[in-house]
Length: 99
Image 1 (spheres, rainbow, N blue to C red):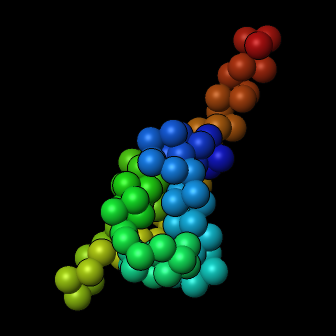
Image 2 (tube, helix red, strand yellow; image 1 turned 120 degrees about the vertical axis):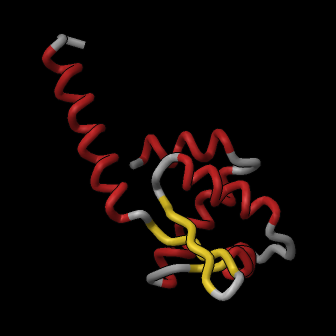
């Protein structure tokens, strides 16, 4: 999961927006809008938030859903479990190969 978040930070315009997106979702305890994230970060526009959300979605960390004409972002719990399993398998393979 950390690797996926790190990759998203590299894709986004600023790591701050990636961190802010994740912390907003966790603190809220569920889906948040781009405006919720912008308010959490104390910024006035959502363009960079959108880039961060898309980067996190590309990495499988969050999922987006449109509700009432507004995009909501939430943690992709199912995907996070898969990301952890993949990381564990990579580590086991590296250990077996003596890396």
